[in-house]
Every structure is written in C-alpha cells, then in structure tokens.
Length: 192
Image (cartoon, rainbow, N blue to C red; front, side):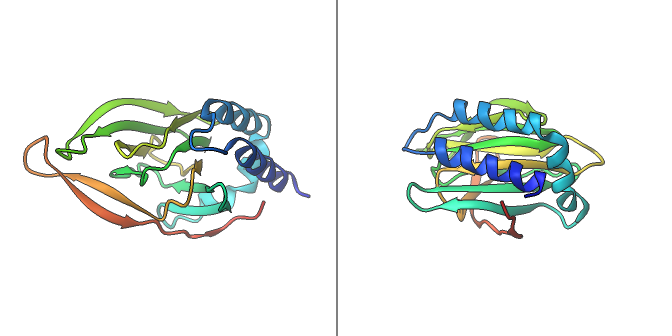
C-alpha cells in the first residue's frame, strides 16, 4: 500500500474509533489525527497534490462514511482567498483539521428566537491543527483560506452526513440575518 493511502486509512480508523456516541471526545480525536498529519505530512502533501492542482474552486471530497453511528469524513480543497459564508452544520458535531496551508475559522452563535448571529471567537489552523464543535443547532462558523496564492486542504469529520445546512447572509441592520438552505455537493470520492 502506498504511503498516502496508508496515512488516509490511519486517519479514517482514528475517526471511526473515536467518533462514537452523541458527544465523542473530539479533543482526543484532534490529538490523534494531528499526530498522524505531523508524522506523515510529506506523504499527505504528495498524495493529495492533485487536489491542490485542480483549480476548480472549492471542492469537497468524501473520504469515508458510516451509518451507525453516523460519521462522515471529507477532504476539502480551498482555493486561495476562498471564504465560506457563515453557515451551520445541521446540528451535527464536527472537527476540522488543516492538512496543507492555513485556515481561519470564526465561530458564531445563533439565537434561535431572533435568528441573530454573534461572533464568539476565531482560530487559525496550520497543518495538524484542529478545531471542533459539539452537536448544537446554535453553532455556526465561517472559514477562510489565509493564503493569497495556494490551495489549502482540510480534513473534516462530522457526526453524520452533512447533506444540508443553512448559510447566513447579513441584511439590513447589523443584527438581521437571512438563512438560505444549502445542499452540500461532493466532487468525488477518495480511496483509503
């Protein structure tokens, strides 16, 4: 087995082993996944170079999925300067880990009664760094590739299938947000 495939398989096994229950230990999952990314950074960069070279915009690639308990793993390619709108995760728990490049992640909280969003903080992720969130319908975030020139790659693990979600657009006054339903598109499947 080639080294990149071996590394992707190791990442999948960690997520499957630790991604159980309604509230898995996401800190432990982040540590384990991050240690593999640090150890095998060169193999991952070489093995996933084709995703960075595609130049087809933001793409989501399915790495693995499981139905019981629900879990999905994706690798996402972020073009230079690409930013998502503020969006939720349909109440799923999730973990995001940088594989190549750097990502900014802004955490937002959504008030269920009014629909207003409030910035809670932000993280900056480099290779092997992760951020995570519990299953919470009030959680939303915005992600941005910090590079002006290079495509970033990230690994995402969710507590189910993130097929639909809401993206939020600020309208009118600062506290008014419009929720737009979205469908998550998958560019393809990666082998592990």
